[in-house]
Amino acid sequence: MAGPLEGVKILDLTSVVMGPFATQILAELGAEVTKVESLKGDNMRDVGPMANPHMGHLHLHLNRGKKGVAVDLKHPSGIEVIKKLIKRSDVLIYNVRPQAMARLGLSYEEVSALNSKIIYLGAYGYSEKGPRAGKAAYDDLIQGGTGVPWLVSKGGKETPRYVPLNFADRVTGLHAVYAVTSALYQREKSGRGQSIEIPMFETISHFVLGDHMAGLSFNPPIGPSGYERLKHRRVYETKNGFICALVYNEAQWTRFWSAMNQPEMMKDPKFISHPARAENIGEIYDLLSEIIKKDTTDHWLMFFESVDVPVARMNAVDDLMSDEHLRETGFFIDEEHPTEGSLYATKTPSNWSHSTPDRVTPAPTLGQHTREVLRELSYDEAEIDALMQSHAVSDGSF
Image (tube, rainbow, N blue to C red; front, top):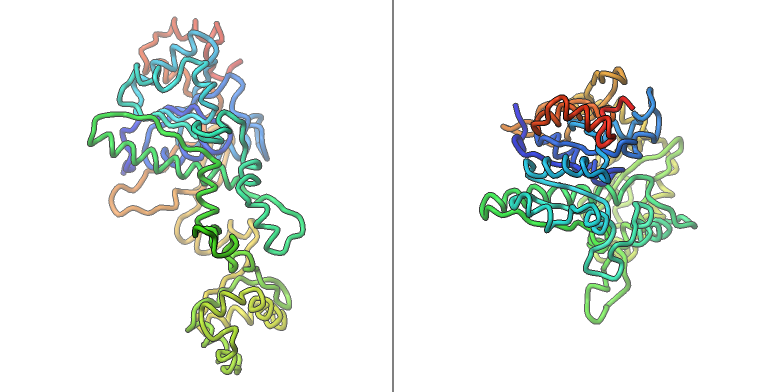
């Protein structure tokens, strides 16, 4: 069955991670996404393990379900191709700085003149309304600028470190997805397109401060920043490994101490109420750490299950590939790529009762669909050959 976004046409002018992650989700939900790359291709093609040149694993996972075309945006004939794509598209997404779009003749004013109903979404570093407008930004810089490495260091690490994920890119990409779908719904009511800005710095600041503004929420402040439990939480070391457990509410702590034959601990001033536990959370987690070190991982898995306290093994990334829950839910897809052979991919994690998205096609090779898309735009074969010869476009053959 077609997905909920069947019939929506998206022009994807994004690269690297943030934008492609957003458009890949939209493709998985049924949108027709046309990914435009330079004649050399997206940089992510050359990152990580690959069976063949320019087909790295990140590209394979970020661009499934898309048609791939290669266009030189600085070539006059290449820009004409883009303008024809704009006229037929519902959404245009880009993640370069707005100034670069304006230099290409693709500002919102110019694009909306071609298609007044288009949703024009820019996802980039900083809002155009502030003093950092137009500054370059990457995941590393945004993590650092929003306090993420600082927070990691407060959890017991001496040196601030980035979260080892494209965290800022992917969170911002998710915001782009909901903005697109909301704008499409609004257009159904108003008949109008619009321009949308999704700045990384503001997006991740919103994310971080939602948890950690704390005492700074009040004017004047009534305490420091920081949600203390999040700063102190930890993976617990056992006698032979590690375990993840969360003894959190009154009932869970009562059952825990009763099973430990120490029910009197609930009368200790540090445990007597939720506010008391919150105030002393670092000391409490230190105590729990010392207790858990005394026995094995399997012991604590059974123990916490028996007292109805949430618990889980600590997996390595490799462990996810054989995780019985993910396997049972059909999370992994066996995919046959026309050039890369047998691959593992992941399906969209959402489940739908009616408009279940179809399986999407594998990520394209560079320029794989250039000729196909040009034909859809009513170029004839002679015109397509001329565009190829002028290097305005490419099908990956040069």
